[in-house]
Image (spheres, rainbow, N blue to C red):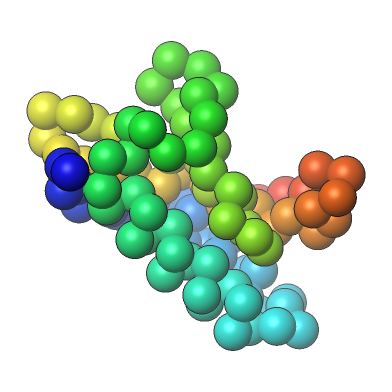
Amino acid sequence: MSRYTVTWLPRALNQVAQIWLESRDRHAITAAVAAIDAELAHDPDSKGEELAEGLRKLRLLPLQALFSVQEQDRLVEVAAVSLVSNPSDGSSKQTE
C-alpha cells in the first residue's frame, strides 16, 4: 500500500468551511473530511472514479471531493468539495 500526502487547495478548504457553517450536522461533515483524508492517503489512484485525465471524484457521504494525484511527488490535491444533498438521486449542492 502506497502512502501519499493529502493537501487541500484553498478553494476546497473554503468550500468545506462554508458547508460546515451551513450544516445542521457538523459532526457528519467533520467525519466525512477525515474519511476523505484517510482514504486518499493510501493508493489514491484507485479511489473514486476518474472524471478526466488527472481528475478523480470520491464520494463519502455527505461530501463529494474532486482531486488529483501526483504520483512522482506522492501527493494528492483536493481541488473542490460539494455537499451531496440527496444521495438517492445523485444531486448535489455546489459551494463556490
